[in-house]
Length: 319
Ligand code: FO1
Image 1 (cartoon, protein in one colour):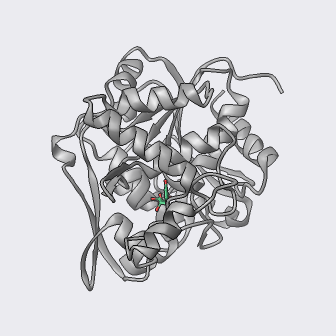
Image 2 (tube, rainbow, N blue to C red):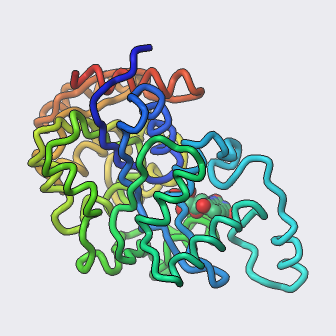
Image 3 (cartoon, rainbow, N blue to C red):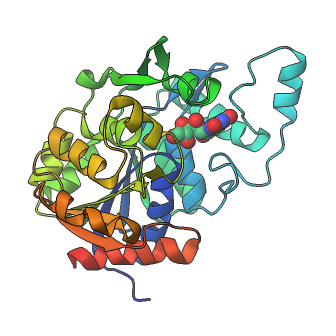
């Protein structure tokens, strides 16, 4: 497989996004993949700053991810959690012994004044990752889930309450004071990217926090690089996570069309291509009526080869 020589920008959050990011890292020339990571899931827990979507990308792109859980590290041990349990501490958010080193180190670096950008760069280098992982911004942006039972911090909704509350909406605390990652904005200004890919992540809690940082989505729209979005909904289901359940609760059609409608309503003219799974081919005409070029491919990534195949399809689409 010949490496794709030009630079690619991928937007990713959560587990589904990281799968395509890995496929892109495999098919793009080393160092030419830039991943803009959601940090709306970040939170302070047990005195530690946790950046789940950045860590999912770090661990996935370095081949160290726990593929069963979809988060954290493979071959993990849980001695600290067990000891914390005996102390009646908070153990609902599972932090493995090796994963804890990442959170301890990141928190210490932040406390010494290092930026999230610098910390992420250092971690990526230590893990010998050629791709560039960019936090979406430096400022704290916290996703709040609004539900019938009240407001919930993202991790409380996602992990502690296991996504059970019916959602009524989302807000991103601090987002109006945030500025898009300066390195990525400089690369976009230089038209450094040949392609922009929105990975199949949850539209509401993984992609919207990135796009809604003031200046972000309009800069992506105005870039000469075509933007390709891969649907996270296949045959009316999310491959992982609560996206389908959220769509149902929000009254959005739980289909690839519902996803396209969400993005076209919020971000007019942002999407150049919308990739849907073969099983959703019948939706192509309806989605095209939104003014988006629809492409059809196998989008379920069950193994490394299928991640590479989808990545290659996306890049060939634009190429
Ligand atoms: N997700 C869970 O469902 N349960 C957990 O106990 C859990 C722990 C955890 C620890 C570190 C980390 O980086 C991610 C972790 N996640 C866990 C995933 C986390 O909730 C992310 O926000 C999701 O991946 C959604 O983006």
